[in-house]
Length: 159
Image (tube, rainbow, N blue to C red; front, side):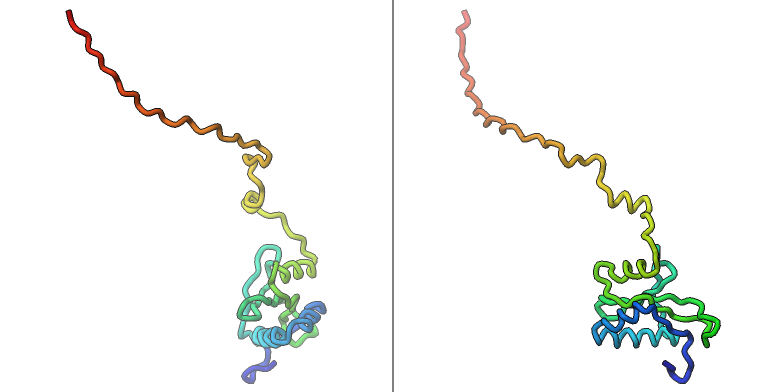
């Protein structure tokens, strides 16, 4: 993993389940993942920061369609390591249905936090909506307009 004659900037470790993820991934995803991780270890690439309950972790898009992700942490290496910091890969999985993020949260023992007030309001049903309220049926249409009756003028003789 030495690039352009310089040593790697970080050590590399894997969660054992992340190694299984990598081995079970399609071969082109596996190759792309290893190439990306080499760039990260050499400090040539940095993944995007994750937020909310996964804050402190980073993600990499593996393929052009962004269907696969790598989630990793940059953390202090053990004292016996040759590097002060290490890249610790937590998961290599598809993004579909938030699979990778749910898997990472499970692997790290993170419970989903309660959502904020605005998100909660957006996900709840409005109290003004009554699903079982009877909707009044429209009455019969009003009668057709009557044609105007011609006015009959009568003249009275004046006496």
